[in-house]
Length: 362
Image 1: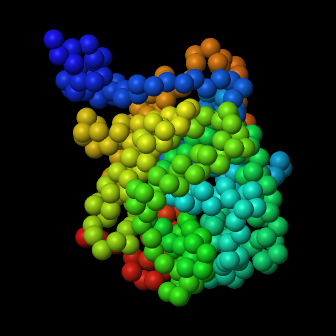
Image 2 (image 1 turned 60 degrees about the vertical axis):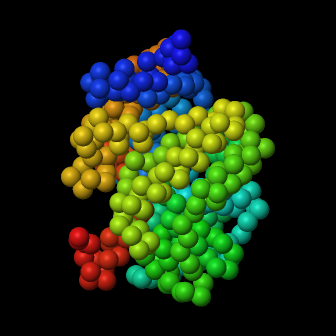
Image 3 (image 1 turned 180 degrees about the horizontal axis):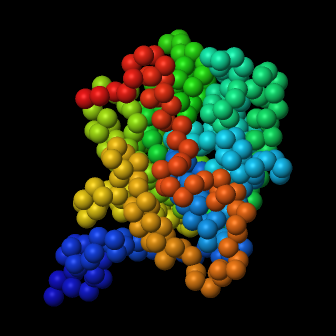
């Protein structure tokens, strides 16, 4: 007799990993089904967009509070970042950024920096600098659009039944004046970097844990029944500001986020971790789930993750083929290629090219 005797097969590597075809590995051990009427919202890094598409493809209720102008074409809506996520906030990479977005939506925090000048003229929002290919003509236009956006974000937080939050990064840039966290460094997609006003920060496990718990508690105060699905993006950092190899920084960031997600799942009811990160990065895939750049996830990897997601979170009787929603904002706005995702972090490479440095090489 020993304590391992009656454990299920998934507790043993030999029974759940090498014995299966790599495409059939399924590390999910906790399921909770999304119904056809549930409003499912998404926020976070670029990988969250794949779950948005899957929800739309299945005909479920992908909750989009900023769908864009009704008379705009799908291509035009995509250019303006409508339907990419539930609201037009672009990539929300860090937990601190998401927590501050929540506070801004409920008038609990107003950042000091209001607008950044764009190199080509006009202005961009420091907290979503790439939501449009064209900058705002005036600061007043920017403020009006942001006010509408934050009202929509408030509706998203209060009205969703599920919130899918994909944790992406721990590295960020913030204001030294009030701690505001930006999705990109000042000067990369707008604005001007100033050492007296801006600083680099790499959030540690204590920071991320505290921020994630605070976010969940605040969300539950205004939406007590919402279920939260946490994932960690398997997409590597595009760049690190730490003086170490980007691969090492990637592993550190993802490890911190993974631990924080696990502790949140153990602490809060109806908070579930979904292991998309583990599926993509597993040794069983032999690197076949990444594009040639070894960063973006390819179609094979995305399909594996989505098969597992559908199996554990979508009831087969919740949808029928004739109920698939061909007009779902996230579905019509994208091509069928999985790497056709909006990734604000990649603007770093574009900034290097503008500076004449080109692509960074080893």
